[in-house]
Length: 450
Image 1 (cartoon, rainbow, N blue to C red):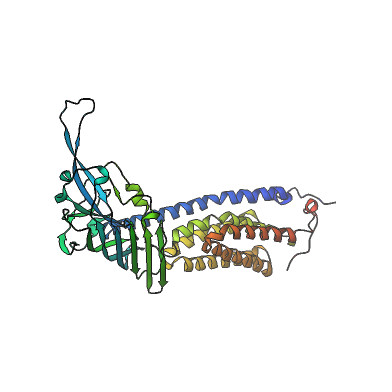
Image 2: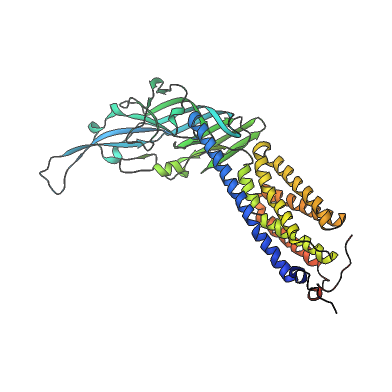
């Protein structure tokens, strides 16, 4: 019959209380975890501010929408309720898109730094070419004499037009026209440039060529406005992320950069080749853009944020392993020792974040995880009173970090891998504890593991 030592702390006499105490420690460790998450958000915001500062001076992410033909005309209205009232003439606009549209762009990238943060920027040499059919306003029953052909404009929208590096000359039917700043009131774009072009002509089609030299950063997008659009982009950036409503028809990514080509017919869009004054397709046109984002292959802040989401898994499995050693080896580990080990696990995420800003995420992850595993290994060598136990715990923790790294790399399969990993961990615990008498665990000595 076992005797109870009245001086022995209650958490040593009751396994239920010990489990509750471990749960409280894990709950307590959520405070530093929350502080780490706040730090990740703060550093990410600081980086965004640095990126904004660089892009404001160099050139922001560019979205190219155009060219479009804006044809103004006069429209006479009368008051149906007052036949004797004088007729009113108002100015309206019709918009026409290219029949064929082609863009060839070369993005020469470089990296600008603001403090410890790197910002990808580019110098774009872009040539727009194609042709328009002669505008036909018969769909709106506009008399020919009311069409203001001498005010017809070709409009090109560019999200950050101040980043244009050279004066732009339009070639319209092989004649040069200098582009002016600003867009027309009837255009669906607010920022860009325009040129007055001859409208009254017997030509069935009008050709155009527009060379642009523009600075930008982080991304470049184009709206496929042609009835038949072909977009070709080349760059020395090695980690492109193709975005938009269509992926490239062909692409080639090498160590020297990438090339991509889109071929988009108007049938795949949700807006027509022409529309009148009372129709607005602004949002539809913006939503139809395609292009490329110049992003780094691994964002350290996004990866750090994702890794923190698995912190409770590390705490539960590590504490469960130590607790099993207590039961199987008949040793006692003080709650303060659990707390120190848990703090080391929490510190991993701060090390990972701070090192990744200087070394990159992969190197930072390797250094931080190795440091934490070695620290826990050295500490548990004394706490668990045997090298083998400490080696088993350290090896298991190393496998956990390797497992987490796999989850972070394979985002598409993270749920599947996480579910399988948890199932295997639970199976291992069940196997190791299959012969334990849980009712008599406090009284039954078990041979220690050496």
